[in-house]
Amino acid sequence: MSIKEKVQKALDGVRSGLQADGGDIELVNVSDDGVVQVKLTGACGSCPMAQMTLQFGVTKAVKDAVPEVKEVQAV
Picture 1 (tube, rainbow, N blue to C red):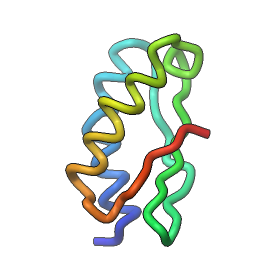
Picture 2: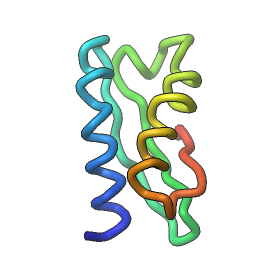
Picture 3: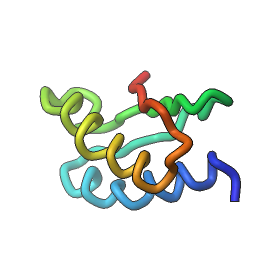
């Protein structure tokens, strides 16, 4: 399984929580140096807590599942 596939699987794991609040997440890119770019959509795109969700929810889930990931960025 590629790093991109592992990242997508990790994002699928947090997606249901985001969708419960009217939002979602899209994988934009996984760079060769371990930087993952995602886009928060729906209610998550404009939520004042989006940065915390990204940092403490999404980043933790992705790094736990894919140790090669160094950073998760919102674009």
